[in-house]
Each structure stands twice: as C-alpha cells, then as structure tokens.
Image (cartoon, rainbow, N blue to C red; front, side, top):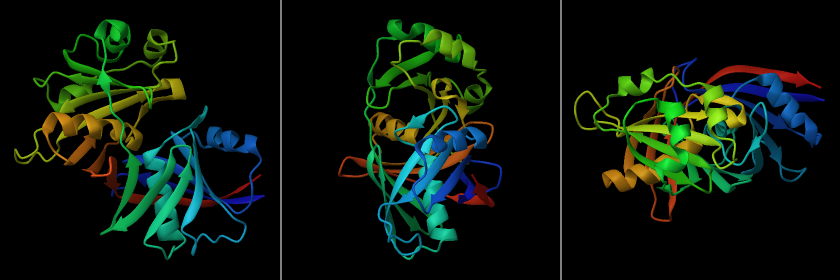
Length: 288
C-alpha cells in the first residue's frame, strides 16, 4: 500500500518554525493499527489522516473528508495545527476547487477556508472555569516553579489546565521557563489534566508590540513535552482572553523555541476562527 505523505509547518510563513505536522492522504481504508504505527514512525506532535467519506470522493473536487489525528502515543480529539496542515495539503497541493472544506472529526465538523494567503479554521470554543489552586498546586509548581501565578482555570471538555502568570512578567520570562516532562507526569496522575497551558498578557497597541497574549503548551500525558504551536489550546485561550480583555479579535503568539502566530476571531455563534499560514517542507510516499 502506498500512501502520499506531506510534512507541513503550520502557523508560520517560515520553514522550520511554527508546528510541523505529517499529513497522510488515504485513498483506501487503512488498517486501524497502522494509524498509530505511522504516527510513532513520524515522531511529530501530530500525524493527520485525511480519508474519503465515500469511495467516489476526490481530493481535488470533494469538499467533505474524514480527519483523524494521532500523537506518537495516542489518538486525540482535536488538533488545530494538523487541521491547518491538512487543509493546506488539499488546497495547495491537490488544488481543491472548493472555497471551504469540511472535516468530520471526533470534535464534530470543522471547516477550513483560504483568505488572503491564510487558512482560517472554524473551531469549537471552550470555556475554562476557575480552579482551586490548592487542588493543582503541585502540578502548577512543577510547571512554573516559584513564578507568581495570577489565575488558574480548568477546561473540563478538553482536560486542559490554564495557568496565567502575573502581569508583572514579560514575554522573556515565559520563554525562560524550564519544564520537565517527568515532573509534570509525577505531579498529575489522576487523568484530570491532559494538557497544561501557561499564558501571559501581551501589550498589543504598544509599538512594536502587536500580541494580545502569549502562551506555551505542555502535554507529556500525550507523549509531547512541549507542543510548538497549538490550535486546540487556543480554542481555550481565546475564550479566556476575550473575557479578560473585552475583545473578540486578537493576535496571539506561542513562545516555543520554534514560535508561531495565530489570528483569532470569536464569532457570534459561539465558535472561534483561528487563522495562520503554512509552509510545505516534504512530500513523499509511505510504502507499507
């Protein structure tokens, strides 16, 4: 069996930045166990599998596809950057003729469209609720050490813990944090948390600053110490920072070593548009 495969850097316009994802185009059904094996082989934070919903579908002409995402250790319910990468493969490599694509996923139907060189994802918006710090104190300390924390929230739908640093800190303080996968795993064994977001207010409007907020994202529970740029985390961050800043339109930056920019628009229907660019790095064929 030969499977077309691509590596795409998402949420960036520069190669070797943003978040890399592998994207596989499945002409035929893939034996279930091979999804995870391929993701393990690729060793990227996510490998996406685009499948036809009907044998007569066409990657160039059809507008609806199935989509699944796998980390090196497990399948996940939502991955923004691999969805963006998947849309980029269909729009730019397969020259898909539709203005909008719909992906049928474990998180429902997700849409993607092209706008002026960007790909805009239509994602669910998740609320993060106030969390008693004492209940997660050990985990928070494992992530940020003695850094002062201003707010802690929890998103039960995504199992993500959001930790906001004090406004007294700068972007460089967030970037300097040293986080250990072993310490995070040791501090959280209940299954309640599957991803930890550390975030900080930006200074949008103060030149040359243009970002409303910054973040980093850690998910060793899914086999990923730090994810470079995370669309699903911003489905939580967008809701939180919109409430905090009183804004529906924001620009965010994820401060991993690779870094990536996300454009955010909260919609009136309770969902969020998250936009970014993508760069192709590799095209090949898997033979299994």
